[in-house]
Length: 113
Image (cartoon, rainbow, N blue to C red):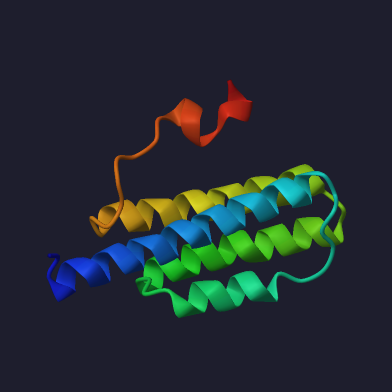
């Protein structure tokens, strides 16, 4: 039986993994030009996660950049910023020791290879 602390860590990792997956899926939709508007839900998600001030600011910059690119209909650039945000979030998860093994570069971004 897992201790309460281990169960909490597993639940937190699941939440973070879901957040990363949701942002990556959103990035793919943006890349196709199928999303238009503000990304307030992503902002709320970032605010709900236990991020350091520095990490939150960096990810907030990625999110603001994505919104600006979307307003200019620069779908590829907006998608890139969202992928960067998802990667930064994934790195925070691994830095906390809550994640499983880190994916290789080709697994994380197969479209680049």
